[in-house]
Image 1 (cartoon, rainbow, N blue to C red):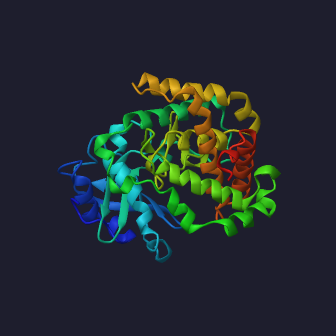
Image 2: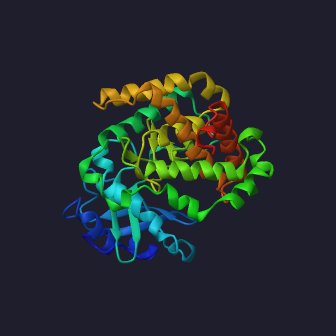
Image 3: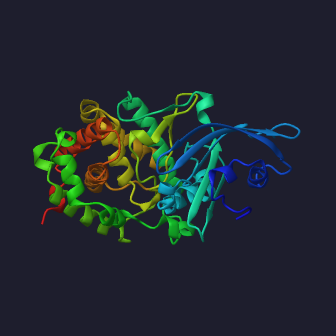
Length: 349
């Protein structure tokens, strides 16, 4: 750590701390004033602010910034969730070339198990944050899949990331946190009403996901760094309208298809996905090849897409504290995709 990771929001927004934190990338900077902006605190705290500097803000640094940490009493218990995201921005984001928020500070306190990230504030640049209710076209999905291909290809089997602890596969941990009872809350109520009956089975989904988690721990298939939670709500359109990814709490090593199957099935309407998914998967694979990666064989591609759909379906089936309209829409899309691909059958006993 170049400076101690802040333990409170007030510390993060102090001129003295920001001078030290930003000084590693912008030598000689002296932050003289901080003007706080809107703060959103749920589990994580996101705080927008503007800085003033002696001799002006350095070239290459926006004065409009946004900090993210786990500073509240509720958030403190989950502060470990910020470690993968802060580590990604610190160690992988720039080298990967994936379009994301531009980080100007990211670090982890290993003793406090706290990660903090400061990025440029894209809202002042007219970025648009999305959710499942946002219009998202197949052409936009092709662009976001190209970004996933950029991330995957740049980290494909990377030797220096093979044993990195914060990138360890974590699907098994999601089974420990939530399970059958949580899924039934969704599947048996109005939120899950749009999930086709043939896949609306909590125990069957948990069994399939447990089997999928076991597969991701094996070393017999190619891995890369994956976003891990690649639904459209973790996409924003930058000031130029280009799809870009954010919210990297679930970043980890894993097979490409966990991102790709999940992204296509969750980002598009059912009709758009059915009409374009083959072309979109082909486009993603073309982008991998263009980056020098040997694409998976044809007989493994659609099996993988089905597994990625299961990944997304499970994550949203255990989700209880998001706007019910969003959860319902994503469960309908992912559940229908799972039924269309008969994705659960491969894991039946």
